[in-house]
Length: 134
Image 1 (cartoon, one colour):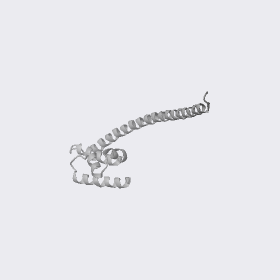
Image 2 (cartoon, helix red, strand yellow):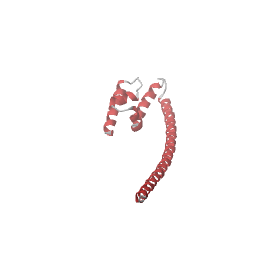
Image 3 (cartoon, rainbow, N blue to C red):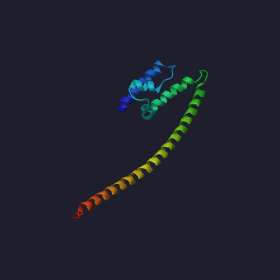
Image 4 (cartoon, rainbow, N blue to C red):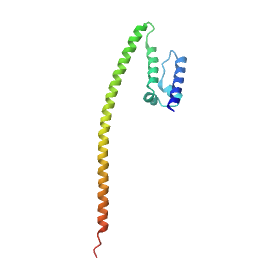
């Protein structure tokens, strides 16, 4: 299914790029035409996002910029994106660490629950084994 979605995304994006050369492209519009959410595009199809951002970025450039200037700006944009990526990776590492501590705590609590269940069973057996006083 993912391959089909990628093919549809590329077809719709190519159509937008052909028909809207001078207009910004909205990721939500692409997603709507394909029948997925915009967050799916952001999370699962980064190359599509990159193509859209590049198109929109180039639209913002004044016509008098030379190719060299455009390349310099793109390199700077790439550098900024790499910095953003590094920050995101650091945040992910922190979240993984937090998740690991929650998993350890969850395991400990599950063990405690099992221990309490066993204790409860033992108490019920003890109570049931006591003969009533007459």
